[in-house]
Length: 266
Image 1 (tube, rainbow, N blue to C red):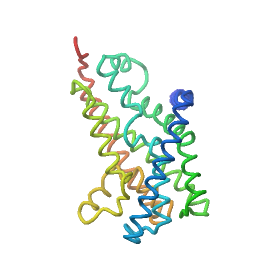
Image 2: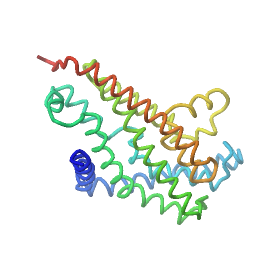
Image 3: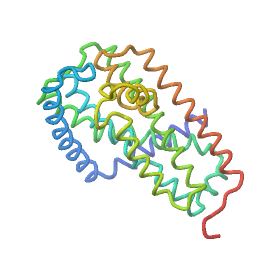
Image 4: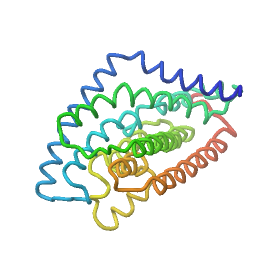
């Protein structure tokens, strides 16, 4: 019970921390809305030429765009979450203090990032999504059970997103600078999650590969579930398996990295 209260407090702290940046949140809402408009009109033109591309009609394609804008910051698809801070703490040796604390390093950062993700969903994601629903034809369900399943899928997507970024952050134990790893994270996040184009629209073997990667658990899977293109149980299973695999890999990498902590420069 004590541990549960501790990590609940960390989640709450992560939420409050990001809630203090009101100007940044407002700017993020505006940015996501503008990019949503750009993508929507691009998708509408594309779907005019290629109707039912990837098995979606135009309303589903529009829904996919606005869902992507709602989850962009929530899932830190291009980065921008805890990983930058953790990389810096590894670089300057502050992680050594973290390892002495009576808390699990991975669970601490997971709880912190979940608090950030929940705030970004509510503070930055809801407004662009509602804007898109109000001004464009969308394919949203009326069944509350589907929305409940979607909420579970988003929660699992948060865990998968954290697990990917935790592995990237841990690479700083061996690299002199985490900038390169963060750049790779940005590119793979946008391309492999479906932010640029739904993964269903990727052709042939390339489509098979990207739909099997963990990034598909972040946007593509929740979107298909919400729009009735996938059943909940296979989606949950796919996300849960990747979450367990990646968290386990993070645990092993953390164990290997922390056997000997070397502070850069001394």
